[in-house]
Amino acid sequence: MFFFILIVNTMANRIDSMRSLKYSSLPNVAQKVGDKFSDWQYYKDSIESNEWPRCRPRYLVCASLIILIIICILVAYFLGAFNKDTVEELIPPNPRILPKPSHSTLHTFKKAAVCADGPPCAEIGKGILERNGSAVDAAIAALFCNGIVNMQSMGLGGGFLMTIYIRESKSAYTLNAREAAPLKATPNMFKDQAEKAKHGALAVGVPGELRGYWTAHKRFGKLPWKELILPSIELCEKGYNMSLAQSDVLSGIRNDTLLREWFLEPNGKYKKTGSVIKPIKLCETLKVIAENGGDDLYNGTLSKVLLQDIKDLGGIITQEDLDNYTARWEDSISTEFRSGDHLYTMPPPASGVLLGFMLNILDGYNFTKDSIDGADNTILTYHRIIEAFKYAYAKRTELGDSKYVNITQLLQNLTSAAYANQIRSQIKDNSTSTDPLDYGAVFYNQPDHGTAHISVLADNGDAVSVTSTVNLYFGAGITSKNTGIILNSGMDDFSSPGFVNYFGLPGSPNNAIAPGKRALSSISPTIITDKNGDVKIVIGAAGGTKITTAVALVIMRNLWFGQNIKEAVDAPRFHHQLYPMEVSYEYGNIQQVISGLEALGHKMKRYRDRGSVICALLKKNDTIYANADHRKGGDVYGLN
Image (cartoon, rainbow, N blue to C red; front, side, top):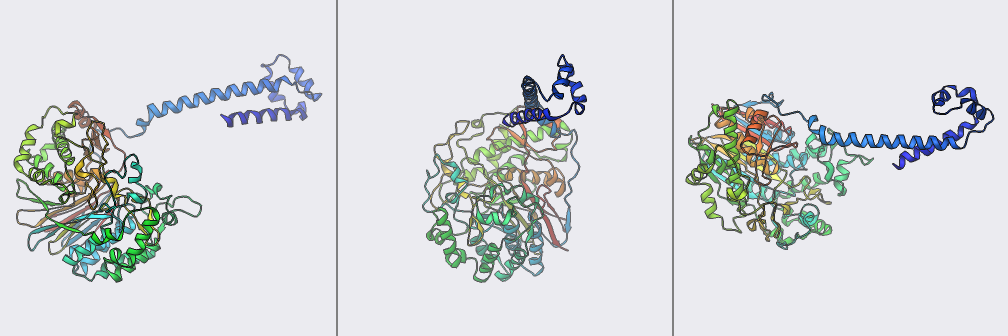
């Protein structure tokens, strides 16, 4: 309004300046306002005598002010109406038929394949396989690359969870390199200051990424360590083209000097998609790691620099934390389906056990391609799937780091066919509940956040599925200034004591902070083999809490609904995590199905973000079919 008044005052000044004008210059203006005033001759005489009436500017000012106020009211009204009534109209309505296939490619290979959500990284992984590197070698090389081009989601300052399958022994292995709480961490350290668990140095957990690479390579690597890093060093020094996925999330980089240097133009504006990014300080760190090995960040020259940077930022990680950190080999979670296929995935603190539980419940419905043929069948099938999701997420509230909490009986239940049958019998086909207690929830867990994923299938039949994260985009929003490493915000994945959610459920004590503990995650890196022990599917996802349900849906669509791997990845998704009590779904789900689910009592809410991003490989009839999810724009490379 200040600016409108300023405009009005300016208009008045302009009117006063018209005293010096001659009558001949104003006939059109005068005639337009002539009806407003009774005596045009009065104005003519006044102008010619250079005596503009003193009262008239005030009238014009008042009239102009009234008009501007009316305009403001009308603008405010229509803006309000736009916000309330027309926003949804701008979003495409739910379609009446399924959308066309995405632009992503269904790749086929004969020997091997690598899928990565960082486009150049799949090619780097393929190059390692060409040099007779192992599946683990290829995964590590691709991860080093992903930590550069997808540094907003993962990197050396974070952690990962990995599932490995060795065809010769028909054995699955899982490696837990998740970030750990520092030894000085306490359960109440974020009480009444939740923001500090997300941003800043207190949010940083002890990074496990590099020690995990080093540990995996020592057991399953074939090529020299240095060869796995050199392609990423070359990429780093040349610079990479920033992806749309990265440019979309730059809002969190302004509080850090290095991130500003990398991602802002000299004028302070964000760099655009396609801009060349050269994180030189990170490149220098990679060179040290290539020469000195993966332990250098924990007990070498880099560790001293890293710890000093964290201390200067106000963090609590010490040399003792780095000395004590180990990447843990753990027993995989195994689930057998009716078909004889076996699913292998990560145990807690990952959510692989929940993935197996969901699929075990639903396996008993004997789904086929007819289960999603027609609206009525689809509504019933989706309803059953959603109910299975809800039961699984209720059990998630009891999970935690098995080294700190006793969840043995819970894991036995969640992997039991009998228990899955019991839960299936409780699902009602004609209704749902909005009470978490009806699904067995006893606590509440924090939702988790963004990640990056890589899937590898080697020529010898070995496979790796690995998901890595720094938690929030760009982690805690800070870097180690002397190493170029983005520091994670892993402490945000723990539950906080004293917090009670909307449904009255307290934060889960099984996921509370404790020194050295690893927080619960939705990460679910998964490998499925057939009854002969040959790899059938290598799959995983990035995307926070929606990871587990996204992986489950793609597996169901391929194994049970008869869709090829691209169709399964493309298909519009839906998700339920019990809190909030609603089904969140993607654009592309048809309106008739949405309405049918609402009629059963489900609250439906369409989400606008990217959701989870799948990297999937399928081997069938001696051919590998591979697809990188169009939702983020990764890529696939392979060998024929």
